[in-house]
Image 1 (spheres, one colour):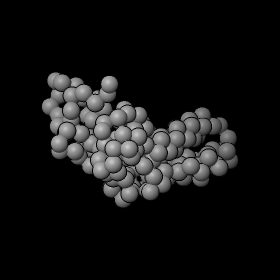
Image 2: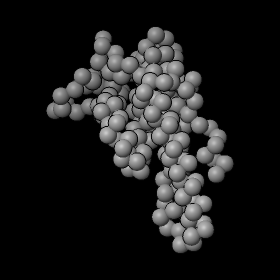
Image 3: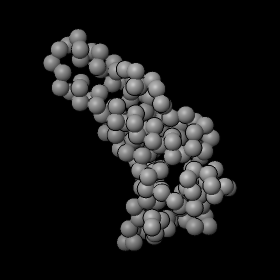
Length: 157
């Protein structure tokens, strides 16, 4: 229970830290889901279900904040190079561990993609609302040349 209340994604955080904390929440949500699924005791199951719902609510709030662009380090499309970067990284090459210069997008966005996949499994309504934005992040890090995309063909070195 304590883990669900500490080290949460903060809207002022850089995109790397935000995604990392969202992925942490996603792991906690999956653990709670498994515990609820395999519990045989009604009293324990009720407490676990409450914990599970609280965890998923926090994960959903965090990802909605990101995809609704309510965080300070927003993701934007870089028309010059054709990819998704953080606003801080776009205007400062040293910000966000080089995100604006396409450094480590597989790490930065991998955390967000993982958290989004977990939330999509646990709350399918998330996919209906934000699936296109999640797909855009996926295309940024996992572009295949046979798929039409506005993302660059090579972003990892």
